[in-house]
Image (cartoon, rainbow, N blue to C red):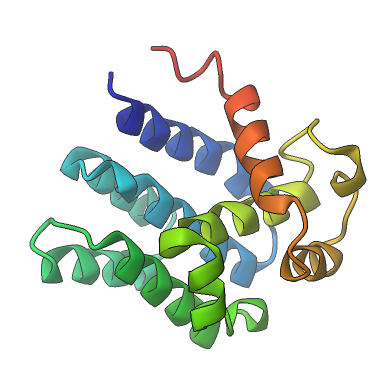
Length: 175
């Protein structure tokens, strides 16, 4: 199993665990979208299809259609930064004020291809729903709004999520 495949599998498992605990529709859509984009870094069609099928099973037709259109438009070859920023802008404009400014050049410059934005915001939503435990204690009890502010101030959310994700799914990724 390749590293990227493991990453995608982890994203799927995380989505299945966290999704039911997210009650707000906008946050559900945003979280699902972030996981989809993060998992497609594997460039594996099977992974993308698995995620799309999972979204379909949750009756999220709008998001699923958007993801499929993006996939088909690129003929299966995902442009990682373009899809990332495009997805965030789409989600922001349609569903959630918190995501409206994420495609700015400053954010892209600070986050190398934009994928760390996805990971950090996934961590924010997981934090709020007590999904990820451990890591930096000073971020573990933030509200969603506080965590957004925390991230925008450039503090340790990105690395915290990365480290916590590796720790949380260490056993599950070895299949």
